Image (cartoon, protein in one colour):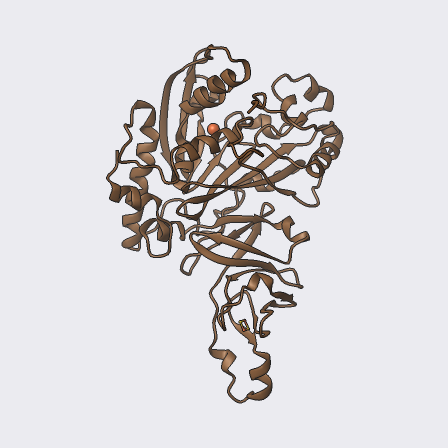
Length: 430
Ligand code: FES
Ligand SMILES: [Fe+2]
């Protein structure tokens, strides 16, 4: 249980708030680079700040204030140029560093004043990695953008899945260090929805949590397994400060504002041997729905079930009313670390998980349960005969709404026909 004040500390993300300042010390994934095959500009709200992301005509990305510094026009309606974004209202041109490069009327009528040299618009650095566009909203110098090892795996088909979930980011991240929810929500509750039967699956017998440089690991033993299992030996990664890593995919919970979170998934699937060498030309990005046509939260896919649980805790979970228990040991560890890091930040000390040495930032490894399976080369036939692997090729089981054009890309990459996934539970009749 936390005090209402402590709860605010964990959940407020605006500039100047303790958590808002801490999160600004890390790079955040905010969009897929392939979105800009079509788009020129995009509205982006992150950490409570309204911004516009653009790709200029020379192919460089920029992230600047959504509202023009002149008279506040919405720059997402602006025009991209060779270098920067031009406001559609009076033509001021801004570059990705926030400089004003042109002020057409003033430059023509009063060139001697050179007033543009004194104008700055808010601008944040962006980088592309793993097909994602990452932004850094903190003070200079920025740490390095982590080069996680999976970003350089070859022979893979990767897709990026993004959803906007209407609740605070911290309850989403607490889910990254909550092993017991798998048994109950994804297995037992999923089974109840699917079959209506009151049968429960294998229980968790023992869980443990450890801290490491880039986050925490959680470890589990379920009925039928023992301590030799990798789920106990290696553990799954709750990635600091707002990620989750399960080997073949990452999830990030990026705060949009105090009451909304961008769920960003990066999912890798090794292509079959017959398709090697495989070089993916472009990583597709798609947006998954959170609600069905009748306005109910979708409950048929793994991450949709997570979204449903997070939203059910309230837009901002009230931690002054909770009763933590033995299964919450990891959550308690994580909260404690956040409170400690917030203190370190106010003392200007080095922060957890920041990478600043370029030599260290090369294909950085993370613990991976059954990691060899993720990158192992297999034939199409082996995959089709593999009871647990095949469903992951046949359909995207994690989230509802994979568009048919992404299914077509995946089918082509796998040499296996990808079809729509009806869900781990049958859609309920409403
Ligand atoms: S409002 Fe943007 S140039 Fe005038
Ligand atoms: Fe989950």
